[in-house]
Amino acid sequence: MSDDVPLGFLIGSLFLLLTLSAFFSGTETALVALNRYRLRHKARSGHRGACLAEQLLKRPDRLITLILFGNNLVNFTAAVIAGAIALKIFGPSAWVSAAATVVFTLVVLIFAEVMPKTLAAIQPERLAFPASYIYYPLQKLAFPLIWAISLVSNALLKLVGVSPDQANPQNLTIEELRVIVNEAGALLPRKRHRMLQGILELEDMTVDDVMVPHNEIIGIDLDDDWPDIIAQIRDSVYTRLPIYQDSIDNVLGILDLRRLVGTDNLSNLDAVKLRQIMANPYFVPEGTPLHRQLVQFQHNRRHSALVVDEYGDIQGLVTLEDILEEIVGEFASDGSPSHADVKPDEDSNGFLVDAGANIRSLNRMMNWHLPTDGAKTLNGLILEQLETIPEQGTGLMLGDYPVEILQTSENIVNLVRIGSPDPTSPPKAA
Image (cartoon, rainbow, N blue to C red; front, side):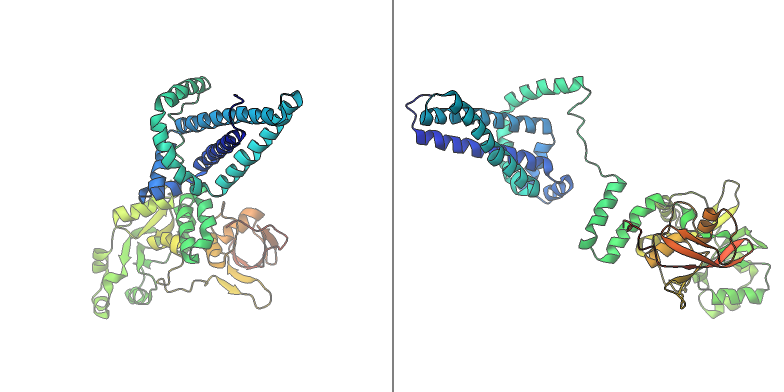
């Protein structure tokens, strides 16, 4: 470095180079730290800075090459100037060179690395979008040099089985999407948040989880007396009823009660007309995912289906309303109160619960966290855990919840008392 260069010019140049180094370091972190989904949304909304940043990040190898080339060039030049300043002030000396190296390293570390990178990590868009206006034309201008450096770098990467053309598309998995929805809970109305969670939960649920079990299906037996059938139709709280003969296993069709609106229609109804207006039964295999069944209902223009096992035996009845309730919550159109299976226990702080209730429905209605990875009903969960038919008064823990058996009959549990969860247990994730 020539002694004719003014000290003030050297110091000013060093300050400028450190500023450029901080710019390169900070913007590198900012661009890499950008939320890709937020970036994509802003770009689609016409944000110019976001559009440029998205274009730059399509080839991260070239962007990083540009930034690192500029940063290393600036740092090397700054180191030379820092040495020249030290020599100009203190003269040639071994300890001066060593001290200048240490001081310069600390200055670069603090002011050109840690501070800008920390700011960029906290507020990436604040730095990344303005920087894109600089990097985009600069990348075009320096393309031959960047291309040559990237070519060598990419060739070395291919030796270890990595190709820059196989960029991660940043696709969300279902679990990652669940995390995003859960974290957004404070920003959404509670009901909308619950609906989003319900939609995602459809991926893990099958028709077995929401169907009405075989022994609880309510239908019309054509072997009953005709006045009893008319009374059942008139008093039904359901809009669709299976029509069977002798046994629910012999289903003949599904009756849509909305086609029988008005007393006149019922007075003129007979078995022949009933068979004419009922729809053919629609069967689906057990284990069908709920999201797929929802599409099938839409495609086939059906609202209910009978769930059968591999032998063709009816296992239950699933309706469109059952699936939609997993998303939007309980409907009132079925004529039954939402908490019909649950009543407060006046003798304790717990609840009296019908053991035939669906576990997922209980969790949804009561904000409980009973295990859902096994049996579908509370009775099934109890029998699965005890591996025997319990006697009245038997107690057990289902997850964090103390359960007491109150009534049993015919090898099933009818009524239980569920207490408050164990306060020593860690809270469940939403």
